Image 1 (cartoon, rainbow, N blue to C red):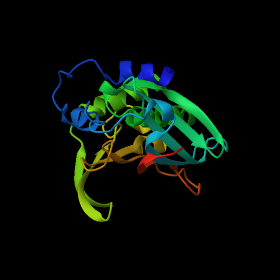
Image 2: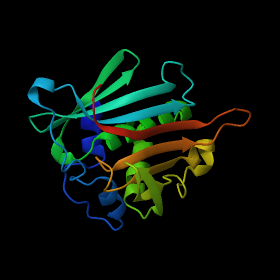
Image 3: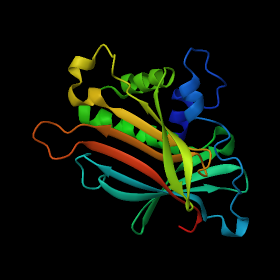
Image 4: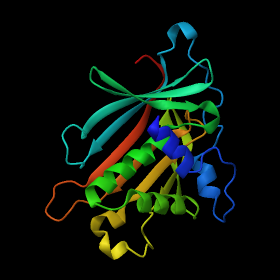
Length: 223
């Protein structure tokens, strides 16, 4: 629940339109209608995931955090949305969100990536969060892409923001100044998000950099 409240307050979800130039990126990535058309799980099967995502994370530096996970999104009969993180036989609730805020997987993605970057860089999470929020209010790099989904090709857009490209503290951030957040969206994908990927280049002499990738797997699946 902490992640929910943090994202709602600091990323502005649920507070109406943002009065700033460049809100197109924000509106594109945080539509309140992202879950429109998806049905709630029946009350007798309330644990069934409406949407399932794969999550693969590397470069965190802690064995219990690196690895492959699954995220289940369940629309409840009371119009709330529950997120659950699965790893093997273990599961952990990630909070409950009102369905009116849209698909909360993007809020979890941003907050988890922000936490990882703050822990590794030693930077202030408040400063990092504000830079990400500012980046969402500016123009993003948008690239049309094609995806293969349900035996057909669909149109999508890859939206990439780089929060620290012009940051005044960039020279002191080392490799973390190259953080890229890329979100691939399509109205033909249930829940809107096909993939959400955060990347940071590897440190000198290191084999891999940081990567946090959430990818849509299926709809209406059993956990």
